[in-house]
Amino acid sequence: MPRPRRGASGHLPCAHALAATLRHLRAVASEIVLDLDGVSFIDSQGLKCILNCQTSCQNDGVGFALAPVTPQARRLFEVAGVLDRLPFTDEETPCS
Image 1: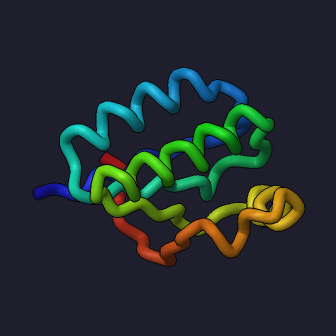
Image 2: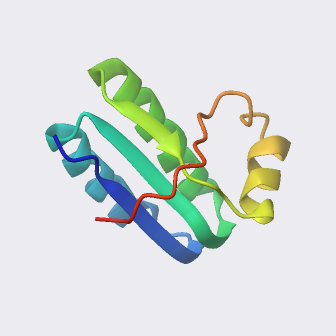
């Protein structure tokens, strides 16, 4: 099965659209890699969306990982106390 990779760039305040996309991917994929390399800002709703997706994937038996993230995003995860909870990958596979 193909491994979907969703890319994002700029700000990530649009959590509703991201959540809908991730819900769809969970239904059709065995693993999701969310590429945040181009994201410079994530608001609290974006963070909540990422955490909810990770939990839903875990509950559904779908793999979930974040691709290399910007220092700003990594710092947000650290300050929020979730850095150790999130799986990261260094893979460089193209977005689909």
